[in-house]
Length: 316
Image (tube, rainbow, N blue to C red):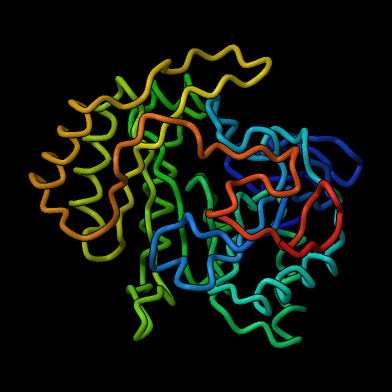
């Protein structure tokens, strides 16, 4: 897998990114990240006391029209770094107490992440490695990831092809994500430390969309039938109507309602989903990040280690 004739994700753009040609992800072959931080907003078994060592990569293979991180996912913000700098960032995150290294939307940079990980491990990196992704992964990518990833944190965005075609330009998303998630969980039983920190396993995230509860119901039913007790589920109700400049795709213009929230709880009971994570309902967007700042998230959520704004390590 490399950047020439790029086929790192299921979109199979086939462009030569080494020549500066950009595919759907919007990135060349040069690594770009928005920030690296100790993040305390992830699921509790991933956060612990030290926080999850998140590295937010620029660009994305999905292009969600309501992306909370659109400033970096659409490639407008992010600093170029070398593979060596990525290695240094991983080691610094561990030195400052990170419980894991959390690669956020890194699929389109896999050829650069792999050597950085190998170098970091040679230099003593010992904490779990976590792959935080859209779930839209090829079999080849998962085979490669399985060689070094301990924890998968994939999305299952929507279960209906007409919805994924309209929102994500990926009618094949449900078929591909279901196959990918089953592969991720195969032979990867949930493992936790004595302190309750995840050391190995899969947590599947599902962001509930207002007015699209049937898609959520189908996801919960699929999860209960295919991966209950093999992976954990994290149901997220933090959808916010983010207006991205230039976006022409119609998105829900409201938050999840209390009635919809109660229906989700009822379905989880119906399908016997007792373990996992379920967000409290908050109809606000005060938590939205702003990557134009060196500290993009509220200070209670993160401690920034490296910023694209300063293009260097920082003390927060």
